Structures are given as C-alpha cells and as structure tokens.
Image 1: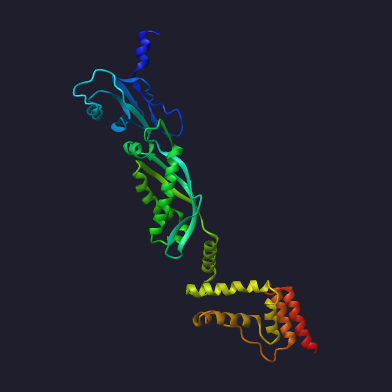
Image 2: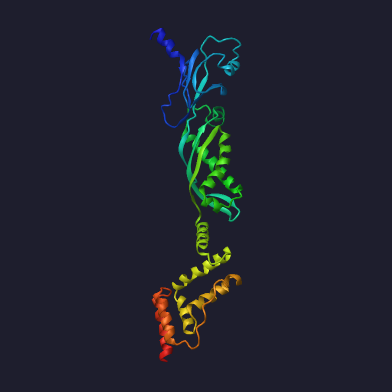
Amino acid sequence: MGIGSFIKKQFIDVLQWNEDTEGVLAWRYPMADQEIQNGGQLVVRESQVAVFVNEGQVADVFGPGTHTLTTRTLPVLTNLKNWDKLFDSPFKSDVYFFSTRVQTGRKWGTPQPITIRDKDFDMVRVRAFGMYSYRVTNARTFFSEISGTREVYTRDEVEDQLRGILMATMASSLGASQVPFLDMAANQALMAQQVKGDLTTAFARYGIALDEFNVASVSLPEELQAALDERISAGMKGGMSADKLAGFTKYQVASSIPLAAGNEGGLAGIGAGLGAGLSVGQVIGQTMGRTLAPQAAAAVPAAPPATSEESIEDRLGKLKGLLDKGLISAADYDSTKAELLKKLIG
C-alpha cells in the first residue's frame, strides 16, 4: 500500500450522510481510527442536521449546506479542545447526522383499553386508533434525551417510546377535558384536537414536533355502547315529547311491547283484556300512564274504552284488524278468538 493511499485512508476530507437506509433517524459517522482533516468539508443535505459531540457532550450543530471545518466554524468544539490558536492538524470528534424529514403515516392505537374520567359516566374504558406524523426539530435535545451515543437510532425505536407518551397523554388530556366523552366519541376531529395540543407539548420535551394527529375510530365497552345506542334511539323516536327524559321513557315503554309479544302470555294478556271489553290501545295507554310522569302521560291519551253494547262479533272484527296490521301474532289472535267464541257460543 502506497503512502498516499495510507494518508487517504486515515484522514477524512468530506463528512456526509447519504441516508441509504429507510427509517433511520440518527446515524453516527464511522470514525474508526480516522481523524477529521482540518479544513475538511461537512456536507449536510436538506432535511438533515449534523452534530459534533466531544466525549458525550454536544458541541456544534450544523444545518443544511456545505461547511468548512475550522476553529471559526467549530467555536464550541474549539473551546472544549482548548485550541487557543488555529489548529493545523487532523482532530477526532464524534459526528452524528439526524434526519429532520417528516415521518408520515405512522399508526397509533391502544392495545389495551385506557381508563379516563368522564363527567357523564365517571370512569370510561376505551380503545382508539388513528394516524400521526412527526419530525426531529431539536437535534441537541433528541440526542440528549433519546438517541444517545448509539451508532444507529431508528424510527421504530423512537416510536416505542412515543406510543407510551401518547397513551399517557391521551388519558390525562381527555380526563381533564370538560367536554363529555360521548360528545368527543361522536366527533373524532374534536377528540383529536383535544389530544393534539397536549401531545405537542409532550413530544417537544424530546426534541420532536408533532406534525399531524387524527383519530380514525373509537371503540367503547359494550355497556357504554349499549347506553349510547339507547340514547341515540330515544333521540330518534322521542319526538312525541319536548322533554328528553319523558321521550326516553316513552321509548323504553314502546320497546317493551315487542318484547312482550315474544314471550308466552305476553300479548295474550292483552287479548284477555279485549275479552273483558278493553282494546289494545287502552291497555297500552294505561301501561304508559302508570310508567310516565303525569305531564308526559297526558301527551299520549288512552284509546276510548269499548262500550257495553259492543258485540263479540265487533270485538272479533277488531281483533282481526289488529292481526292484519301485524300488531299481534297469529298465536295471540287464535287464543283470544277462541276465548271470545267460547263466550259467544256459551
């Protein structure tokens, strides 16, 4: 090996990072036994930052551009090295490159439900999923707090830490909010906005800027989802009363009627009421009257009672009409019809 090749191998004239590996956020220039040439060139590409580190202490930081390495361009390192005059020989220093490009399309989620406080339900356990993007904005802080002196620090490694920060921040952010959780669950943009502000502050402590954050889906526990479904259904069907509570109660009573039809003796009891001279409308009206508040019951008047002159034939006709309209089942019709015919025949 010639003397020229030896010198070329031992001294570095140009320091640069080509970013030939996807997903790397921090990369240490491989120095080995080499030294940096005085007056050498440092090439920092767009979306990169270069940091000189002396014995684990951050010295000089360089943004995009081509920089000539002298005591003038390395003032902090010059001070740390006690160069009281222009150095004219190669020197050793760790050089780290950091990628500052935006890391887009990163997925986040809650592997386990997180518990948050809520003004309506006290405590709520939820799962949520979405996307976010971020970038390194403060290389000094990122080096000191996260990446350290490792040769390579990847996106996957930092995101393991970011997920923990995200979960803790989401729980505290939503818990401290005065907005009911159900309102946020119905408006995922509102939830994302609430969390993003606190998450931005949490990320900044590590030299990272949160670029975008969104919530794609929210999964509620079964009991809370059932309560939400009932509230939504009540809102859709509770138009018969201006009072929401009365409308919700009416909806519950109305919902109980199909359930009764599916049970033995359910609508048969109503059919027996027909035999005693009562219509289905009157039975429903009386049931709602007992369940609802007086002012709500007044909004749904009971059907007029059957007159004593009403014949069994008329009652049978009404019963057939209920069957044709699908208000009672064939079994209920047959059993009630049998009772009425029994009375008619004697």
